[in-house]
Length: 294
Image (tube, rainbow, N blue to C red; front, side):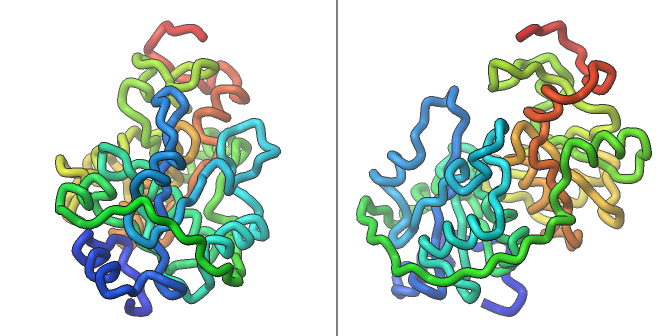
């Protein structure tokens, strides 16, 4: 790869790499699938049954702050370093992430962002995910061989992570535009949240850009001109700082990826997102059109 790693790689590019036995210490492929408990899908079990040849499994829940009451909050730098080193990844490894969502992409951008956040820019998302990989007739396997451990040194860019207090202060100051990547119904408060202890809605000033709008009908990422149009129509200025949120910090990373593809230096993620906000925020900072109750 060139010094500037592409944010997306095609299925054909990765299939050629697999066929030419390039997967190894310098190229690692990760299945980063994660699903909400309500889907009753077990991504680790699915990985054991079928995955892209040579790939490893990245568990978003395992590589997280397990002491937090909130789902998959970011791990420490040392935890991340240890975890990805065990996956055979060093600081000179090009990492390609994908997931098995029927949408084509769901959780892979979160792991792409985590690598970026911890100082590893040589990371790409497989465009179209496993959905298109299989549709295009590329090989899958159940075989898995644990790679040799490598040393990885993470360097956290803490400025890219926002917390409850940051968002609360921004509601008063209006300094930064904040995009919420959940569906329009969850954002407005007219559709239920997938977590039973959380009601839908949004915080003041948030701009809704459902993450699915960044994907085309096939599950591949929209072209740059379409992405530009989406941000423009939402009133988001990519020449200015941008923060993003969602349900628990996963699909917000679709917005980060899209902005990155358009040259934004780094959208910041509210890691706790709506799951945390709903539990901590005063009632006046929860806007909802619905009358749902937990």
